[in-house]
Amino acid sequence: MSINKYLKSGCTGNIRIGNNVTMTSSGGGTGWVGEVTVFADLPDVSTNLGNIYLVRTSTGFLWNRRKGFYRSNGTSWNRLSNATFEVLDNEANFSDNVDNTKKMNIELSAISTGTNRTIIMPDNDAEIGLIKKINSDIQPVNPNDNYDFLNGGLKDVNVTNAITLGDSINISVDSDFNNSSLIGVINENKKTFEDMIEPTGFINRIDSTISWSDSSPDRTFTISPVTTSFSFYQNSKKYTKTGSDSIQLTNTVGVWVIYYDSGVLNAINQPTNIQIEDIYLNKVLVAYVYWNTILSNGRLFEERHGCRMDGSTHFYLHNHNNLAYISGLALDNFTPDSSGDIDSHAQFSVDAGLVFDEDISLSISEVGTTIGLEIWYKSGSIWTWTTNPGFSILTTGTGRAAYNLNGTQVEVPSTNFVLCHVFVWNDVGANKVIAVQGQDQYTTLANARLGADNEITTLDIVELLKPEMRPLGTVIFQTANGYTNAVKSRVRSYDGTVYADFRLNPIGKWFI
Image 1 (cartoon, helix red, strand yellow):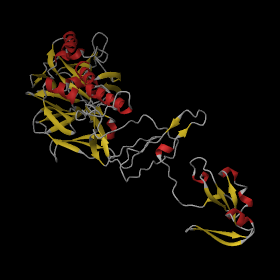
Image 2 (cartoon, one colour):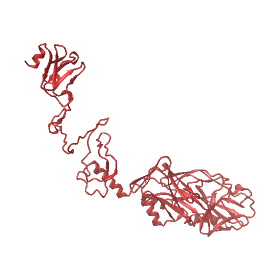
Image 3 (tube, one colour):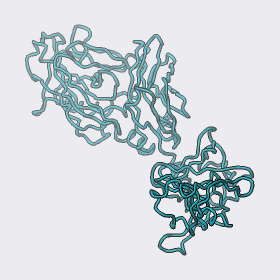
Image 4 (tube, helix red, strand yellow):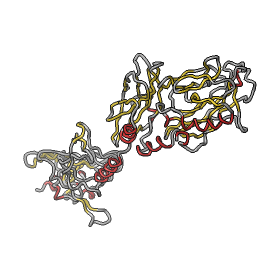
């Protein structure tokens, strides 16, 4: 009697098939019922609770479409086997549901013997493409870095070495790495940046802060992250700093240039033109410091330029454009040609304004009429500075105004004239507008006005940061014993103008 015939006859009991399978008939209740050709032929599952059917033919690769015994639980047909479905790679292929001539095979021959690889599907739609073979010619960069093709690609969780792209050590990379592949394009782009020696500079200047200490610690420059880190490029290589960097200067007068080279902070005193060019083209400029050995005081100047400006452009702008004037910064609130009896006759203000040091914008605050500018002058061969509260000129001798003659303070003869040159520069501190003491004296007002044009182009300021300065204007002062204010001086106008205004002069003209 066949199994089918026996179970359908209404008999009850157990039937053993072979050594491992026992089938139970319940005499018309639950148990074996019959057989069908394919899974789709199984009857309604809800009316066959407990019934068992044999599916003779597999359809597709889905586990619940394979041939075998199925039992209804009232809601679904469950295949009565926990065996893993396995198919040989040369026995399986996928066909397009519209055009079955479009096929895909899976090739597993490259997997090591005894190894089981797993494809992990990301939680989004995925399109596999632009990934070519990577062989052992690729050299590791940093251990424990994964190859990770994100956003619809594949991730090999067992690969723990990153690859270098375009490095000279990879001279025998696989032939699949060509300019038509993704990695080839990346290599080509990287080589372009290396050929340009760019980018160089800070990614975001406000991610860091710079500071200067005259003492404790002595003559020390520091750059620190504002929050957790700051980053910069040098010759297309990125550096990230998560802590502060400091450098201590020697007690040597003059301009110091501070820069990064290969991630290390460096400083040079009074650099030559060749050294400056090398820093601008090949290093990462950070700041200037002017150190005054007379006052044991340093002044810090901003130079954290962005990585979007190339070194050649930066060097050109540094040499030819100087600080660029944008707006404001007029000299104002004069009472010219007055008696010289009260202080306001020798005072003036400077309006707020805006300048640019290449790609760095600098907002300049107003300087009030009674404040007086910081006054820079030479003492011997050294540039130094002082203040004369309320005024922007110095006095000497009997109290008349002074001019600076080869580093010496000389009193201007009574009723003669002297100049005050007003500059803006990129000082990090409060003194972004300064007065430079006149370096001659004049017997007539007309000569003083000609002297304003001459002195502004011939000032002996070689030791200062000339390319980081911009002249705003020159004021003519007359000094005399008969003037009774604190500086025995008054502002004089000439030909209808109260000062020589240089803000809109052609860029760079003043230092010719």
